[in-house]
Amino acid sequence: MRKLFTVLALLAGLLVARPGRAQELNAEVQVSLQNVTITDPSLVNQMQSEMRRILNETIWTKQTYGPNERIRLRLFVGITAIPQAGTYLATMRLIATRPVYGTSYETNVLSLTDRNFIFNFTPTTPLLFSPGTNSFTSNLASLLGFYSYIVIGTDQDSFSRLGGSPYYDQARLIVQYSAGQTTTTNESDVGWTDSNSSNRYWLLNNLQDPQLEAFRTALYAYYRQGLDIFIEKPADARTSIVSALSGIQKANALRPGTLFVRAFFNAKADEIVNIFRTSTPEQKQQLVTMLSDADPDDLAKYQTLLQP
Image 1: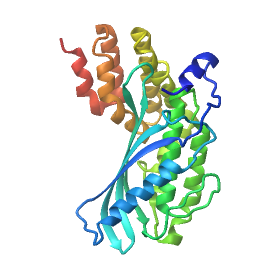
Image 2 (image 1 turned 90 degrees about the vertical axis):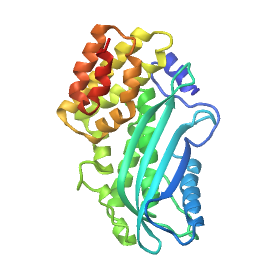
Image 3 (image 1 turned 45 degrees about the horizontal axis):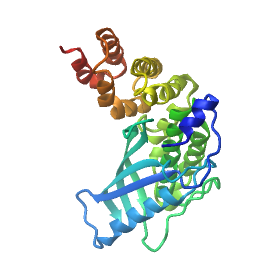
Image 4 (image 1 turned 45 degrees about the vertical axis):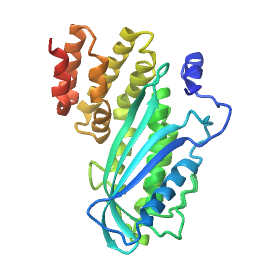
């Protein structure tokens, strides 16, 4: 369990360096073929290996992470088309988890889908990504770098109030230089632009929008002040989680249908139901009323809390 829990309890949320050094991510990568064929089956394994190497061997931050503190990340990449040799169209699903203090339970912090991106891959050319250099090398490297910083940022937000800000700034740099460079490698990718409200450009905009700050502070209330104390103080934990969900409701009212709010409930709806299954009838009703506005897509799940 991350020593940061103890640090936060003692120093009221201030982050300090921890002894030991390891990369931040513990990533698993699975690449699959969706209605396409590749003449060399080993190519898929090479893609997986290169993506895993970038994620797990890059030092993304100046924080120190012990071997057991790394963020667990699962990446599922599906290749949907091969427009020409060495060029691939793909979708990606990302799931990042975080341990809950005092338990063996891991909770999903992120569940995201990038539905359409393009990348070049040559087995003889390793993927290259150098944090802090602001240098575009390939669309796939930029994509992996961008989501690594989003994952680290949301993880830090869950441990300290607005703790993820420096990592969202790094993701912003990747968006800026990638948007103008993908055409030079024939990997033109509109996901780096404001062309679609459900792409990675707007995902980051949501996270950095001051008007949606209530969402990010809700992450701290939900995880650090909620789930992490649930074993010892379940009533206090539920109160904090209700407060967190109220913040998300307010952020959603300002910007209905934002990508990150949808991603949050995709990851948390079932968990929320389980948290409040043994709550008071009054709190259950309050929760269902609030979430019928914030997360109508999952309303049927929440309404099961009102059944006798």
